[in-house]
Image (cartoon, rainbow, N blue to C red; front, side):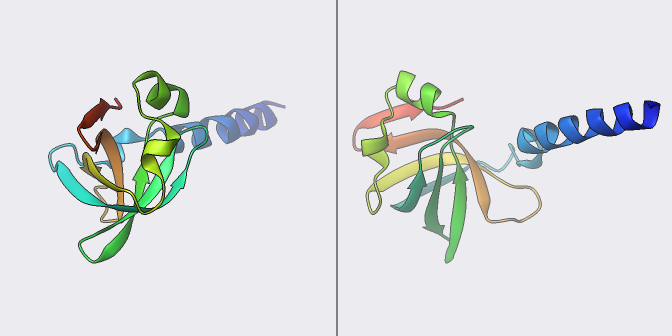
Length: 113
């Protein structure tokens, strides 16, 4: 019985910890990318996008949609092929993924964290 309870608790805890592991990003290496967005997903638990950076396609981890909208970033502002500036942090392990702190669209800057 204890093993079953431990296994059930672990099964719930591990995905949650893996999803919100901001420590896997290198906060000492801020990057700024100005590029057209090639794809956008506007959904929960957070939005995502793709941009070309350093000759590769990067996955972009945004904030939850309610936070983005509350701070003035709408889905229409991140449409495919629209040029944006993204400021954030790359993953520490070299994966082509970045966690975004700030989005600049035109003359509007939106802080996500």
